[in-house]
Image (tube, rainbow, N blue to C red; front, side, top):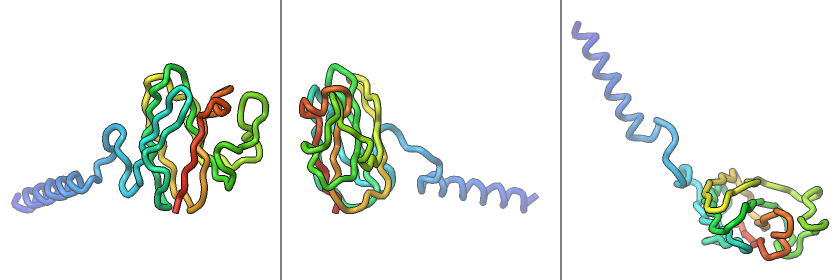
Length: 146
């Protein structure tokens, strides 16, 4: 009997340590994952504003908030070209020859979500909304990763 009681106490202690150290899984809401740089991004009709335009290389969690009245996108493009100078085909940016790192295709008006971009390398990134006409209306910005 004492050995079962000792084993149960040890198991309970290990469980408490795992929970206290965060081994129990997902956190809540829009907080960044461990070690990631957090960037708040506001998508409005018709602009994208980042609270940081330069971040360290590595994991970056973008907390996206659509404060506009229509659906928007958030597209991360690895490119040397400034965000305002991307190739346009009709009403959208021609993504065919671009290096799309990650994206959220539909962020509802008033909606929020998080996009975790893993292991961003040093360089220049263009952030755009590529819904028809939005890029041409000013929905783009630049991000530098150092």
